[in-house]
Image 1 (tube, rainbow, N blue to C red):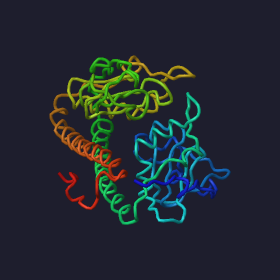
Image 2 (image 1 turned 90 degrees about the horizontal axis):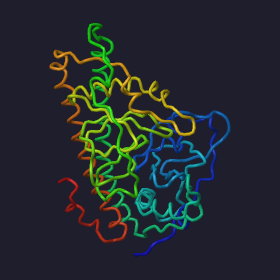
Image 3 (image 1 turned 90 degrees about the vertical axis):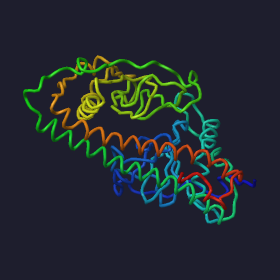
Image 4 (image 1 turned 180 degrees about the vertical axis):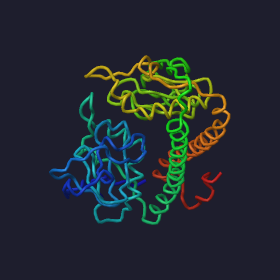
Length: 368
């Protein structure tokens, strides 16, 4: 398999854009890029003075701080990126941007970026060395076929994510109307610690894990790595325990290994779902409850003392089927996306190394 260096076919963006011309939708920093190759979300902040690196449609953006977080995005619009984001732009040549993107999407690229990184506590990829990463050299028709095949998988995953976002918004709307705006003052108020099990996870480092697909939930906004065992059942609330994201509330519809986090599990899945919406409603207050300046922490006791209410039987009978149906559909979509992700990640290195041909891609298990 012939390969070329990334630097032979691409360069870093050398154009600039005024920050005043950008919005939270088209400004890309390391904070609004999602780890584990999940793309990006809108930025929470935006400076208005000065200039920053410009990106254009079909550029490839990669977070250069802590490459092991695997933050990468293929630009679908124009905008600006921070200094800690590598903005890679193809030169005029016979390489397809989306094909090069999938070369850099491989785990082997992020392993390489870590290998040539500088610094231990906050490693940064070496920009010069990154340009030496080898890119598979196929003819344009083959590049197009590979990119189209992998894009078809990502399109299915993205569609599931959009559907799930709409379903989650629907559940929140129902909760806000019936359990916030029209909550009965006669409902018995209780602390979350009285109606749910609120406990700390079990610390485990990446070196202590065994190979598996169980997500380890720690102090971030997403899972940190994977393990072979779980210690919490599906439909569990987690509250990140420490670090910059201490207090972040999440809900898991799959078995997980809870590590540097607090977990909340009520008597029924329905009650746990309502507690989750209640905690998300008070997300900012939970963030503010973090203790410690150098390393903020949120403890189980902080969550136990939050006031909620005992769910009346009639409300549970009326709304449990609704919330359960929505939750089950989200879980089903997530399961399908996980299967497609595994398929994509299994195919990717073999396609790039020529081990699998795209000429007979109708036989690949995409729609099975």
